Amino acid sequence: MTSHDLRDQLASLTTEAFRPELAEIDRLPTLDIARLMNGEDAGVPAAVATQLPRIAAAVDAVAARMGRGGRLVYAGAGTAGRLGVLDASECPPTFGTGPDQVVGLIAGGPAAMVTSVEGAEDSEELARRDLDALKLTPDDTVVGVSASGRTPYAVGAVAHARSLGALTIGLACNEGSALAAAAEHAIEVVVGPELLTGSTRLKAGTAQKLVLNMLSTITMIRLGKTYGNLMVDVRASNDKLRARAHRIVALATGASDADIGKALTETGGEVKHAILTLLAGVDGPTASRLLEESGGHLRTALTHAAR
Image 1 (cartoon, helix red, strand yellow):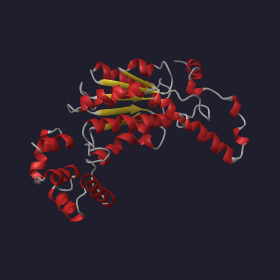
Image 2 (cartoon, one colour; image 1 turned 60 degrees about the horizontal axis):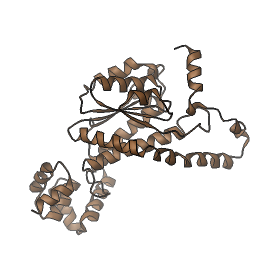
Image 3 (cartoon, rainbow, N blue to C red; image 1 turned 90 degrees about the vertical axis):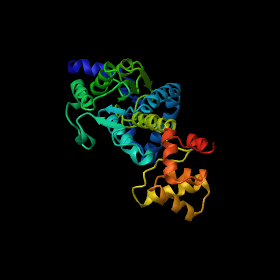
Image 4 (tube, one colour; image 1 turned 90 degrees about the horizontal axis):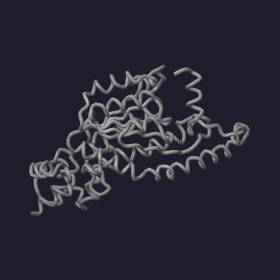
């Protein structure tokens, strides 16, 4: 593609549109600019809402595969890639997932998290290599993330993953995108032109963050990583998280501090197991067995314990 063709392509995208009514924004008082930005951001959740049925369908498909041992893989460049890496990196401490269960790939590798890697986003071959290193299976899911919906790295990742039989999701912020066309599940959140022309780390970035939050969080709820709205698979790896683990057990059981401390000690700090010992009156090993037989779902384990 020539530079002229690329300019024409970008000019046709909603996310790249120029807004002449904002051409004097640099002359405005700071508070007025802040109000403008805040007003722009307020419309993002409504744009996400239009895609909720598609997001829900994608979540159900992801959860079914992850329940069979599959992985959730995000692939993107620039801001989109960083948001995927961020979401993936927060799953282990929040939901107790293994480091290879939710994976974030960014064009150019880890260095691209903090600096631009020239040309990386334009390489479909790089996306194929990054995915091949993961040895994808049909139980895996690859989510291509791209505000424009045309980024070669994201589109190439989805196309390659689909050719290997993996589930594919395309998350973009323009209608009729190449990324959506390449994926089995298309999610296109159209937030409109940015306050700063083409700066898709703004509304488009916010929209992508909201959708990624939903994809991972609701998938984990479906997989039994929560009990109600409590994070019962939280990994207590520091003082704050240990205190949170204690509080979660208290909220779930209403037990005394002494009993909670004893249960957490007996179960090696595993919140879900501790709750089960307290609510079902079983010991640690029995709690482990019940949870294993229940696929990690605490409610199911509690039902089995009551029989």
